[in-house]
Image 1 (cartoon, one colour):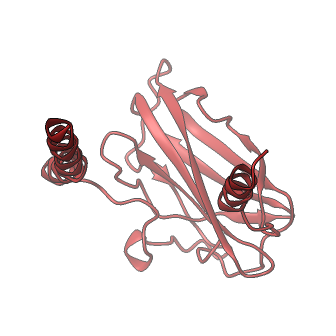
Image 2: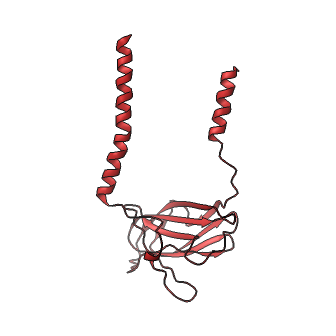
Image 3: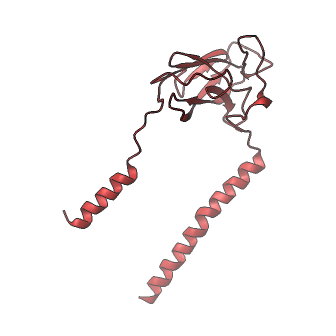
Length: 189
C-alpha cells in the first residue's frame, strides 16, 4: 500500500468513527417498529441499557405519538420511568401510520431521542374522542400539551411543498452548475 492509500484509510476511519457512547441506548420496544396493531389502548414499553435520570413527570423522559401523514402530535408527551423502561399508554382509533417518538435523559445528562413507525387498523370499531398519549400525574392531574414543547409539529401542505422546492433547488442548482462546468471543460479539450 502506498503512503497515500494508508492516509486515505486513516482519514476515512476517523471520519466514520463516532465518539464512544455512554448514553442510554434503546434495547427493545413494545410494540415493535413497523408492527400492525389493533386500535385501542396501546401500551408502549421502551427498554434502555440503563435507567434514565430521575426527573419530574412530563419533563425530560417522554413518549409521544404523531400522525405520519402530517407530523401532528396527538396529545402531550409523557412517560413513567420503571427501572430502565419508559412506559405509557396510547389511545388510537383511526386507521393509519403513526410515529412513536421518544426522548430520554441519560444518567450522565445527555438527551437521546428516537422514533419508530407503527400501523393502526381498527377492526373492533374502537373509538376515542382524545387520541394520542393521555398523561395524568400521580395526583390525577392531566398534563396539557400547551405546557410543553411538542416532540413533533404539524406540517401544513404548503410548508411541505416549500420544503420540497427548497431541497430540490439545493440539489438542482449545484448539479446544473457542476454539469455546465464539466461541459465547458470538455469543450476546451
